[in-house]
Length: 328
Image (cartoon, rainbow, N blue to C red; front, side):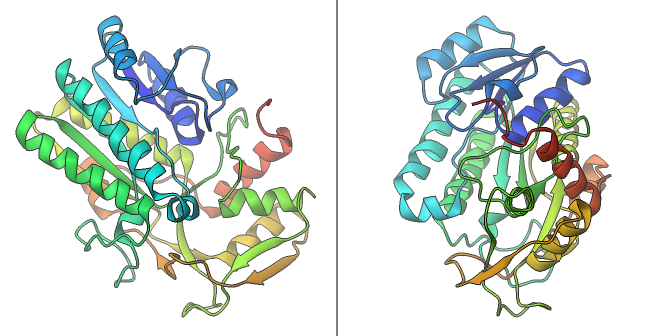
């Protein structure tokens, strides 16, 4: 059985569904602070609770035959991390330590960790490999880098086998349009643009228009949530087949799109016109973040199936089918 922490969230719910479709048994642990119970596949066992609750973790590991943990539970808003860094160090770092301690105590040695390209900070190269220097520029990125360091040390001292997946920008929704992206507040570009095109907001805010990029707006690498989910399952299979694993992989499409390009693609797919307002740059926003996925392609055989048009189209289908998101 696989324990998915944060399995009621955007990414965790997609991974949970894909695991179940692959024949795995899944238990989801989530405190529903940002996730949605309606997003959790009914075939999974749902456990309401927090990963910081060591007593609950002990009960879960005793009750269920957990063989691996996929860890998605974290706070992940860059701006909030700057305003309230202690929340990020407590929720992301301290609680992950408690989770991993309980795993070690119960001899559960396989972990897949949800990390981020924010560990790189403001990169010096055009395309980032895993060997690029880590220099996070906000508490969110630093909290994830700290966890990666902890996992590396535990791998050497306690035989923890782990794969850390550094996500770039995740988008899209399940092709069935049954689950998708529903955050509050929503900070991701694609859902914000699509919600605006549905008439829910007056304008789309673009933070910065004079970066050293082709059109002056930030450039990001986008990956479909289902491609991301597939990478997690490949990582799980890799952990099951290999004895000593301490690996880090980037997850991206190796292609960058600017904010204005994303807005234009959303307009094309929705057949609607956006009202755009350019605001001041945000502190902590690097101009360019594009992944090299060569390592995960070579080691795990991963290859993304969805292009940008499909990412946006599946997201639009989700928003059209669920204009108010999941039931509140």
